[in-house]
Image (cartoon, rainbow, N blue to C red; front, side):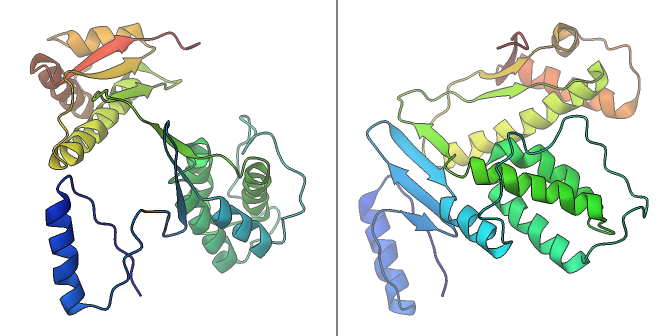
Length: 251
């Protein structure tokens, strides 16, 4: 059994497609989307929310952590996981399954995305402390399982992105370039749905030096990756597709 979502701003075309699909496949039309691939969709007059509450509860039951004490954070910011065999290796298959399930959960839980990417670096040889870090994430989602993505109903058609990297200007410039690639992809998807995006798209950054470099024709760092990033971003600014705006870290 396979699930499929159909979306269109033309109801007639949508109904015609469903009729043609029904000629080839046995189908059941459930009308408005409420549940899809472990994701729950809720609607209100204010907007649409997407969550994975049931997925979280099932995961906690599967790992026997439904009664665990919740954690306030997914990981201590000072945590540095080791690759030394101090605590002995863990069951690799179990570690892979848990991390894989958490990666899927991060689709609606961006607050754990960074932590999941960190623990996934040890898939080749998971140790005891790596599993403890995964359990800490499970304890965190136990206390926050009700969180969701919320898309507010609005007439606005703008795309905004925020970047914040506690590192060098070179790294922040690379991060901004990655963010730009993502919003260009999002713009393409949205416009395929016949929704025109307001330009320029806003990229907010808390590093004034990086902003100045983005607008400058000349950049002192001659390394190839930075040079490519710089010219790519500068080109999109000059074309009026994107603009970069300063925002304080505290905001």
